[in-house]
Image 1 (cartoon, rainbow, N blue to C red):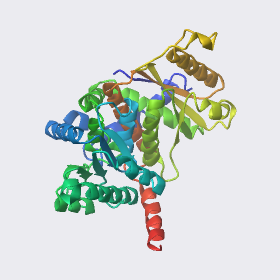
Image 2 (image 1 turned 30 degrees about the horizontal axis):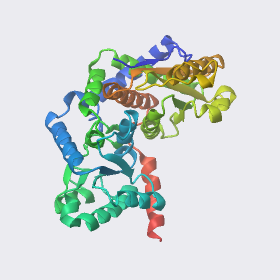
Image 3 (image 1 turned 120 degrees about the vertical axis):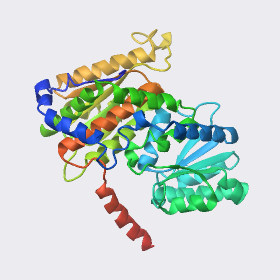
Image 4 (image 1 turned 180 degrees about the vertical axis):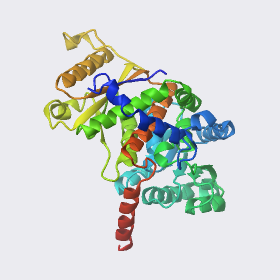
Length: 412
């Protein structure tokens, strides 16, 4: 493995982690048994369908050849993972279509500006929704589809619309059959927040020029490595030890801004998986050094209800020297060197203040390493939720708010 989660500064001892060994071993057995619902992601990197992957790559090449703008309409797990991958690996790249995300909010301003932005561009779009009825992507899809029909005609637009949805049921699948969109499947045994290594995340990433084969390979290496289960289980156990001590907030902290959406994906992953039955650890994200100037005081001396998981990237993809005009001690050093000094200073100060700190060390950010990160956190999240005694794969609270919101809409 290239990544390493270190709990030595968390205040959690190995004997305390070993006290959870029965629960973690049971969780691992359940996940790999193939008998639990929504665990298709567990062996996906090992058992992935090469033919399906080639279809994704061929479709991505087709989109790249005819479009300079690719709109992805989706929300939650139908959006967050793909954006996390693209942003973490450099964002929109020259020579590839610009990937624009829609349907993740209900702002008329936001979506009107998308329409204005694409009016004079060659555009393709992908709607990602298992049911086709989720309000935000449905509204965005309808808007963008009509704009594309006005520009390309109904048949022309249909050749530029792609769908990722349920294999058999749902209103979107019916539309796919009726209009002839090219489509991919949201696997029935994989929930949205665990779907990033399926077509849901792979197609947008491939269009953006990401090496998705390396992404999957990284996850595969993690899944096959004899040490991966120990690291993931230890991290899951340490989180629960800290929770029992009253540390009920986990703050994911990044010193590379490109990882902000990876943090957003982590928030959904842990929030939806653990936050039920009055249980769970509340996930939060901070981007440093920016947020040190707003939240650093609270972290250092505020209410002791949190612990920190700090991501350290050893070799950033690019670096640049600070000019001599900055003066001592900055002149002649790189931004990366100073960033690393701040990282170590923050960890040291917070550890001395008694804040539990877990570090995740990343040698460099590339598709292979990111695949490892994705799989590591999917696994550790599922194990952690099982330790708490909750189902990691449902989200009954989400369904409750959707029902109330739909009732309000129907009253308009």
